[in-house]
Length: 301
Image 1 (cartoon, rainbow, N blue to C red):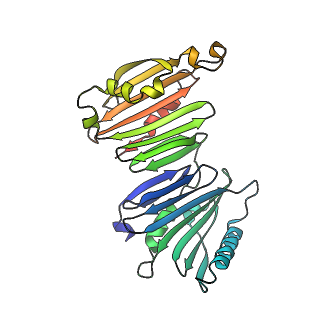
Image 2: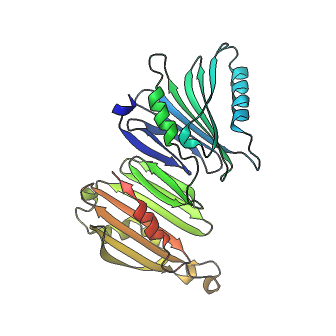
């Protein structure tokens, strides 16, 4: 079954994994410290992902599984009195992490993976639900083996609905919008701000305007505190527009006594995909290289 399945990447708060292309996020909660994701197909919940901070000295994965099994048995002793639990399985590709795989069969059935992450000090718990008719072993093995439970080489992977990119691990998601036709991610890093947006139906959006005019109109609110200029250009063979500006001194707290706040942005039109991609960065660093790094990491379909 796994060999016939089409796959997509899903990444959220520094955790990334492969999921079948027909599975989509149905619920997204929390932040970098703790959170929950539910992934569904057209009819059922197929996967759950949870993560939480584990403190300075996280317990071993085996102990965490002990505690989890005891707690669930206690809570479900009336509705699920005799569950079958199979333990002590491991994933070779996760050898760098303390982890354990176990299977719960009872009122519900799920293959589970618990991973202890040493750098982020988070515990990641991933569950794939199955039925007696199809235990999804091969598919689950692919999902578990693809898991990246924390940022690698200082980069966190984000991926949803065909948009995939990387940002530095210090960026924290502040807002997100996952609407039909527009995916938006807004990150903060201290006083700096990073925005990544993908617009669909680009041909319709640009039907009666230029890319530059569309950009300044669509991002007027984000740019209103800046004196800026735009310039048409080419980006990776796609028509594009670059924006650069400085925050008006009246808009800056403490006015002239603060360092200059700079905005840089890049918007480009991928005509074959009928998409517009935008990366916008606000920082105090002239020629901040993070804009190009994020833009260069983007893949989209």
